[in-house]
Image (cartoon, rainbow, N blue to C red; front, side, top):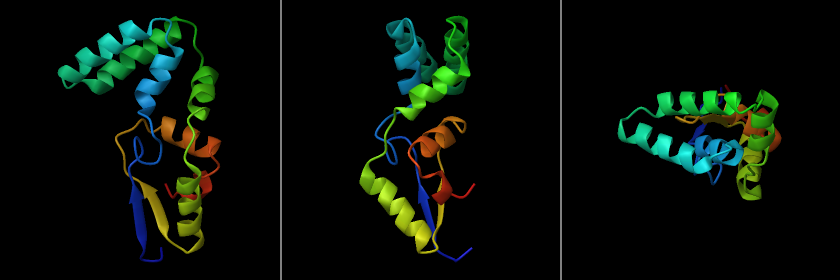
Length: 121
């Protein structure tokens, strides 16, 4: 570690999306029903439980892990963000992500955007 640390949030910082809702609304057969369920979960401070439900619904609709990966790979990072992460890493910065976003979604999106190698676990 170099002593220089850069920490990023994920949703609406590194990507201009909410990765949870993006994948649910893109893949759901009934996005309006999914939106309603997630809204109710949010009001009850039960977002994780709501996302568990939505992942279960997507599985029941026949969606596979590969479908989630393909959908998440569609989320593009701005070139300036990718370049900044690459630059910081090349200058010896310890680049990290501190986020409440889905910890499986984040690496899928980072890999798809070619920046996973710049972020330390």
